[in-house]
Length: 581
Image (cartoon, rainbow, N blue to C red; front, side):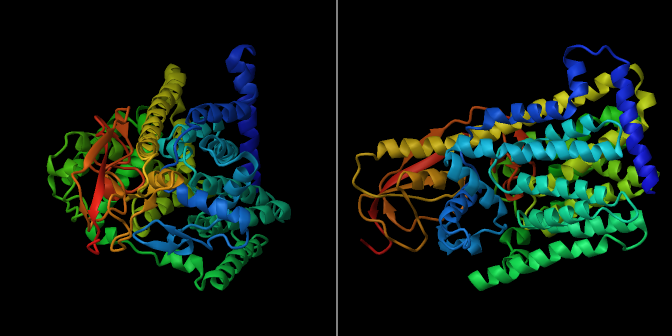
């Protein structure tokens, strides 16, 4: 088994050398062939650099506040309160992720400052690591690792996530490094202790960045047992992450009276009660296909005409079943505008996203059935395990939960392409380049739409600040995410339901598209409406058009093409608070 793997790697290097030798060694393409990893790193930076000024968005503030607290209290990472849900709550209850990404952010912030550009530039490193680690893993499993790494980069689920400051891409970077090191550690009969121990520590750190990293333990256990057919010498190393996680659980129980791993696993949401299993499964497929878009754009090169027709038929039936109500959705979308007016944008796009999901599932299943080796088992469990967690286990379907499977999908695409290489003929380079370009263009467009959406919250907060700069009355607001961060930076205070601290003349601001919104139990003057236009024809989050990249409760699609509603804000002066004052 090990000899075969080493031979495969040698064949890969030989094949790459043959390709390079058979072409003129001059020009940009020759340089890329000689320095593929450097080019991939530069390409990743080039794709993400335009988003370095992106406004803080969605859950970014939680990580920023935690990082700022860590700078002064490094051993008590969640020992402060924040108003993130309805009321002021201890951060250890609010944050359902471990703190390692916040520690990394604290390092960046303490050295370079807390501006958007400084933090986003610092978070380029995990994104580059993901792409390069995908290259290294694909080099072991394929002859075209460059294509696999590029397909990971141009997936919308990855590119959009890499423009955020949340923990997901950092977790994936450690995930990929742990797999690469673990596989290197198994390359000899006696094992390579240095690599196995490093992988075990990386495994532990991965889960201390995001708890999903614990899935590495059963994944690598299954792969190792299948590959080596024995428990020696690798099994003992898997006790290292278990011990580290246990230590973290004991420490957080000591700090906060609750072990945070156990708390995260018992976290529940009311959203699940509003969904049906089959409706949620269809939404999960749509999210998977949209986030792993290369599985769709490569379809003509991956499958025969007959296979594509079968996939299109199944996709059409599932999308139509969703739209016609043949499969119950529950009440989660009952009052949303896109559902009530039967927006024409949703079913057509859902068809394509589901088609992409069918393609990626077929890639994993067919690769496992045909090759039946340790690599195919690893990739199959990687993809199916991630989808099972994101669709069945997690409290909501979102793109961030599906992110970990994207490198595996990219590697599966290349393995399938190599199986069909002879059928591609003279169109091989077009079959490789065109799908990557299409997916990359769409991914950049989606990321630009998400950046434009984040920008409106910063603009709204700036507008309100300028409007009330000379005002002696207090400013209160509802809503969370980036809007809360910028409003608090300007001195405004979050409004808590049933806590009537407002006085006559105070200003209350309520965004239309946000979270933690509640009826205002106060008498207010005639409100002023202020709109901020989203300057793009694509959006990641809007319940009126069915987009829910970060939260499927806002829509059944990860992103939606079409007109984007303006971001509306209501501002009103308090006449009388809930206490009659």
